[in-house]
Image 1 (cartoon, rainbow, N blue to C red):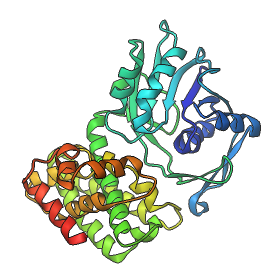
Image 2 (image 1 turned 135 degrees about the horizontal axis):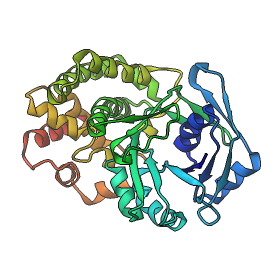
Image 3 (image 1 turned 45 degrees about the vertical axis):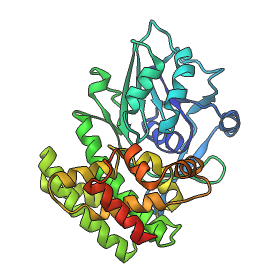
Length: 354
């Protein structure tokens, strides 16, 4: 049985991918550029994953070894999970390529909710013997003290089956999905859009605790209204069963409103410049709702709140706002034509929310 590698020993790699592998008694290695993190993982030889609300018994992860890129060996690995932030995927390509044998076949699954992560990493690696797929991460994980993780008790990682050319890890919890593009859009427009509504409208109301914002009556009212409209247009566009889509949305609502999941507005609102992309979680569903003549006001208000969002740790976002007007952000980042209905709607809410 070949070994498995997890590149990126952060919250998702350590707290979710490692948990699924540990549950099936699979050994694996971590590879991370952070030398201190690698040292600590090897020194402690284990860490604990606890679940929000004690929904399940804690899990001890100890079936691993950890390496930096300089001393890692992937000769015995066939399956590799890459769990780094989307903007870091290009940087992973070169050091990972140096570890791969051009005469062996490798299967890689990216574990980051980003736009076209598999394509980005595939191009960065640039090897024909490497198949790169992508997944969608539903599980919330939070770093606890030391190396320990607090996690949602979510049991699956769904990934694009078509991109792995028939390869199936055959490990419980890792679910191959056909027509993954539609599935990803469904998740982006349902889960991720809802998360933004809560995070940015919560920010405007002064919340720092995510679950408190999610349970605010006014925010919940707008969230449910947007779910209703989004469910309708997704079913029209993609042919989803109405009941299944409603259940899918309710699962996300239950997750976000769960008071035992400890999370922050800042974490969910980070990098608004990425979330405002033209095909991303706010502009994407806005365009779809507009296409079918439905009310996109909740997403307009959310986009306006994103433009107004500020956090001292958001250096890139602050630079963007220093060099662009709100209108220029809407055209250059969101891809909205100046003076169009969506463009004007968002700017009108900016004026109201100021």
